[in-house]
Image: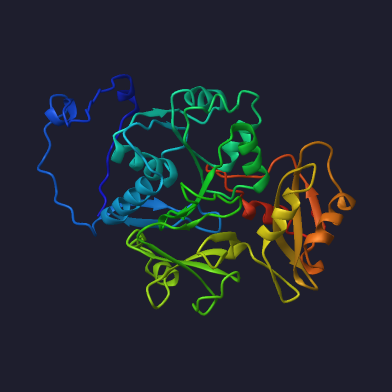
Length: 393
């Protein structure tokens, strides 16, 4: 059972400095600056190491109970896949209350015993300054969009950098291309969730394809299944299922939610909609909870968003389903525009070319910014509440 650690803000003015050298020396191991402690408790691989609460974008947050073995396995898989060495230097601008900043970034750094430059928050200029001495940066799509908006982002400034990774939310193809044009670097997009750790990644060496999340990591099995749990054919859309020792032990004190998350054969059902190519490369389409059913047809918002994001004048988009008395749900597109607001006539030609008619948005709304959580995920639940009524504007 987890215990309680009590902290007092008044002690913030009296920091204790702990050091740990690469050879294992330092005040931390000497015990000269810490109070006496009891004997350490032996831990097994299957013991609980952390409880990470899900973002709650689709409902009440659940505590994903992760084991020591799971965290260690994921750390080694990423360390090896992304080719970390003692010569690396991580520029860390992620919040450490989230799996991305707390485990993904820091575990790779700890395994390599490399320097980490911590930023109190993501700041474009501070990050760009860090690129002068760094080699690795891990971010979310919002970070890369803000970096691309700065005239200071150049190939010269990124000369020492070798790896830029992106996750926690989908990266648009225009954003991927813009960053490559400015820096010469191709962002390495990966996929994971609190319950599983990082499970797929575009290759370190080889093609990093915009809009895809690459291949299953070593030690991870991934497949795409239908609603009955049967694996779908290559290229067909289904739900991502994962099997690995990385996967959580269950949801903390939520046995029913835990049972619902696993298939009978032990595969964890992620709830993420995707397709898998014949070579195993995975392309995400969105969350199953975001899928729109209109007139009996399944519509995947991500497919529509990819078309909208390519239209001149569209900075980003979010597609949601809202109630419709005739079709059950109708497709609504929420746009953020780069300049003057776009209207129906501005986007219809692209939609006519790329999408079947039943997938076209029935309504278009233009707003200044999409609502996001701390990790940059679009809060589609907030948008659905905002536009739930048929006459909402």
